[in-house]
Length: 274
Image (cartoon, rainbow, N blue to C red; front, side):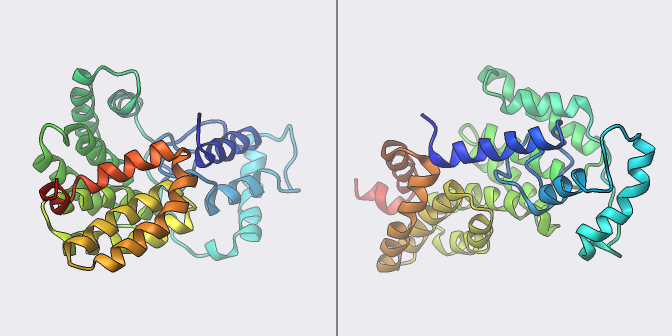
């Protein structure tokens, strides 16, 4: 049975798509209208798109040219802060890249086929010069797929993804998901202070994006990093504070406890203690 956050997330996206854009676009870095599933609730950008869609200046039956002629004034009215901001056009995403990334991460793909698809997606992103979140996501996908077989290569992929995501404040949530992977590696190797540095910038991002599952995961990891640096009292407080977020984010107590055990198992102190 889905948990509270998963139900809420589905309602956000499905209602929004029923009201406005029907298609997902991978080139949108700050939108639920993106099949990479990084954003889980409507963003400021999404709300602006919906306000523009239902602006009184527009009506059903208008041609594309008529709508385009009215949009500058509409956007000036509903988003005055955007006036004077330089337009950064990202190139469209190729169907080939979309196909490979969906194959690499899709639920129906045999394990043996994921690596080839992820490799092709990364090669396509590099060839197309997607010097944005799509290249970062390609590195991220590769890291996820190789992390069991080759943790060191996975860490290198996550570092490359992190470098791409740090280029823009619009990709903070991508960077937060990457921080989970990087900090997990650092904790497993006993590098508690490095993990704290990795995690700390993204706690606020997860909170502001109302992503309880991500926030609680960051907090679970932070607790283990604090343990590694000898701050056991702080670790207990962080772990306790994380539980309500985890219950909302993961739904069942069973799922919550499984996630907590997985993260605690990373800590070499826990491995030494049995």
